[in-house]
Length: 595
Image 1 (cartoon, helix red, strand yellow):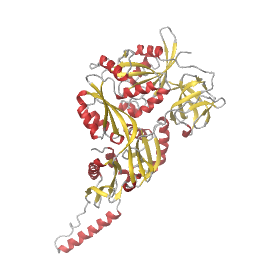
Image 2 (cartoon, rainbow, N blue to C red):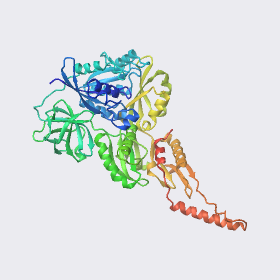
Image 3 (cartoon, rainbow, N blue to C red):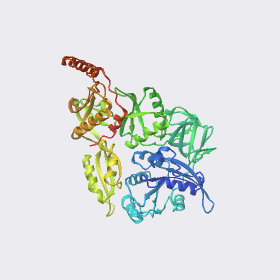
Image 4 (cartoon, rainbow, N blue to C red):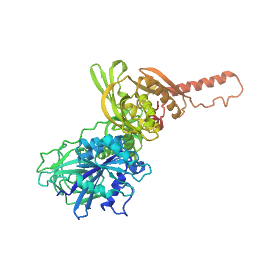
């Protein structure tokens, strides 16, 4: 059986991966014209709204060529944004080949470069496709030159327009001819790799697997090698647009297994599934352990929703294994979770999914990165600014750095160099792909790029620059903890770690912003920013006052003075015992801190 091809589609964001997947599904007859809709694999409402792929999707296509030979094509459509690179790397482990899509108008962009390197490292056969050749701004020769120069791929690319259906048959033929067929070994003990999972409220946890050896049948007893959990297969089948039940999943194929798994913790993405009675010796190495780079607190509006948020995070982690979380408490916000994300878009998507899919109302604290702090000959790992040690005890601080790759037209290079310099970047490389396109490499602190950097980059380059990054070794930095006090009480949710040079600006921005957001109370509210117990910025919210002199007309001045003094004393007591209500918009303002 040399008729199985497992391949994925990789590209930079918005280069036409999902549209190409639509055309492949149409061409192979997997889906009828009547059922067809744009970006059909992007099943999440959020994906359609934003026009981006968030989750990799696996789908089985049956195809008959001109000689009536039948093939099974297992396609995985992957995301293109840098925050979802982990989804791409997991998909690559289940494939033998990759279709690399390059936009004819945009050319090679940052994530094209990153995903190509991932595919090369996974030893996949790469089929280059230059898409959107129908656009008036298409520069096919320029895109081909960039492909050779930037990606070091010298194969003749397939010219296609996924929108118009041009080049689709050539892509299918190239997949069959060039991608190595999946090895078939049904006689060996079962060895299958879990590369995705999701939760079904009726069937429990459903796992998506690539079977390398052996066969999965209904009624078979299976074992998860990492957790040791054993289950009986209740249902097995293939992913079409909806799951389709089958007698078995054979080796070389991609499919799903339903085994009535209720304990979410038994599932580990990258684990090996084998048969209980005849376990395999070929255990998969699994995926590289992913570490979150951006942390933020997630808190329910109502404390009664805490258990609901916990359950929602457990279910969401099944379909997004790069999400990490642990419980924490805040004096201002109560009980919640400290969550780890791969980037600020990942944070935004997780929050929206929790709110939409699980009907939760959530507050998000300001995102921050993980710092290493040396205190009295021990190294502390700090993921929450509230846990930052006293300045007097700190000997050294290390902050995470990234190597950023920026690809942009030559005319915007001045503005981009200026932006990177403001963000404390160090230039390491400048390379010209041709006379119009330049590649910049910078070492940047991760804390400087997690909020607002991508928007600023698009703004100064009029949308033409593309951006990707990978993590490098941490570096020492002159960092301080900036605390916000409201009515003389430190609000831990507003604490941030900033570079000493930017602390003054950040303090004035935050106190000013909070002054405009927090409503007036019956007593005066001071808002102060401090570093090492030294106040560096202050704003006051004036008290709402009742006109106590309205009823006092004429008479001696001492009567008026007495009433005013009584009011003043009442305000002083209120300020001492009064509680300041902080609206949710105040926490949103923290996410938009500017220079």
